[in-house]
Amino acid sequence: MSAVRVRIAPSPSGFLHVGTARTAVYNFLFARHHGGKFILRIEDTDTARSSEEMVQVILDGMKWLGLNWDEGPIFQSRRNELYKEWGKKLAESGHSYWCFCTPEELEERRKAAISQKIAWKYDRKCLKLSQEEIEANKKAGKPAALRLKVPEGKTGFTDLVGGELERENADIEDMVCLRSDGRPTYNFAAVVDDYDMKISHVIRGNDHISNTFKQILLYRALNLPVPEFAHLPLILGADKKKVSKRQGAVAVTDYRDTGFLPETMLNFLALLGWSPGDGREIMSREELIQAFSLARVGAANPVFDLQKLEWMNGEYIRRLPDEELLARAFPFLEKASLVKPEEKKSKRDYFLRVLPLLKERCRLLSDFAEMGDYFFKEEFDYDPKGAEKQFADPQTASRLEKVAAAWKAVEPFSKEKTEEALRLLAEKEGEKAAAFIHPIRLAITGKTMGPALFDLVEVLGRKRVLARLSRAVEYLKSRTPAAKT
Image (cartoon, rainbow, N blue to C red; front, side):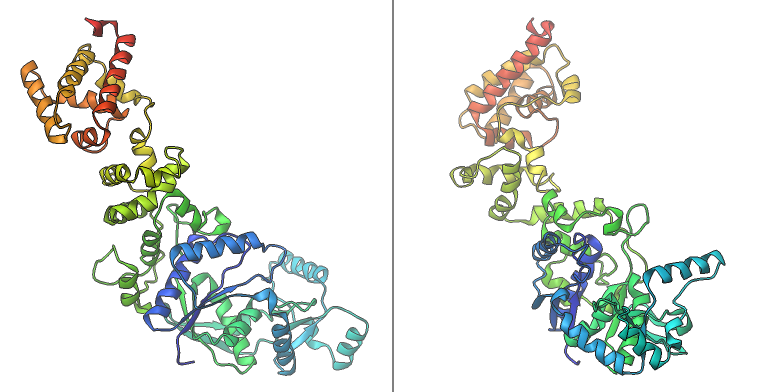
């Protein structure tokens, strides 16, 4: 097992949430850093809770993040014959025994232990059965599960993140490896699969540490080489509780649909528990691969900081070339019903002027539709708070009319010429330019903030700007009689 081979093994009983995605990222980076293989395994033995829909969501999330796997997806549900073969080997190893206890019997004994305030684990009732009793039970058709006989002593291993870990075997239950219906349990299937797939390093969340002790016992019982283990700190939410699919964490694909870039998400997830050690935060995929090391994974639980994720996404958006930005943002404009599919080509030059103006303030791809809707439609409302402040002066309508008259004659209708004309007008009127600029912005965009005013005036063009100024004047005169004077 000298070659690096790692795997990510999600269960399709839920979405690919950020915890599993971060684990997948670390496995991927580790494999690529060492020139090894990254394998995708779908642990779908729980047929009642698994679904094809969730499998597809997992695959979509992996593909979106760019975590291209080398082998798989391999489905556990299609490997039952392999588990039965290894179950037979375990049964013959002398390290296991058949258990005929029914679920009802086990539950009754568990409740009895709890009532006596005794920590429950399987009481080894069936370990005491003679060979004759075992054969008689099988002949009578009693369902039998195969349990591992946990030896005396201690089990320990060197965790590549947490260091030396050890546990008393007396605290480990004789776990079921094969259920009475022949299906494998999680730990048994994981060991069989990891050996069969020649996994060299098992990198996963530290909530699996208790499973690792059990799995090491299984490796030893089957006389198999034990892989290296690295257990990652769990990701916490803002409430300092574990982020997991069972606590309502959204799917990775939900971040995609919200407007995050995959390269942002990859970068952000990589830094949840690991750092390159040199202060870098914005790192390309190639830089992450080159720098990644399990030695720099910390033990402290990182917090999923949504604000930092949004900041980072804004940084990535600003670095996108204009053509690439158009390709990424257009679906969000289309989803907001601001553009039509055919316009991506027919109005390409216009979009390539608009999007660069907006990107300085956008943190999400969806922000382009929200912050810049006025570039794509003529009808919009005025921001209420902005109107209350910028449209309050009775002279505003008159000022807007004078701006429209000045700009009607400007040639060319450029940002330089429109700014020059407005400042000359303000000087002539004996007023500050701001008395014109802020109401103009609200009049032609409906908003109080956005790109530099004269840049957006140039992009909107004379016809649209004058029409919007006229619309604002009519609005003001209809609401403020004093403005007519």
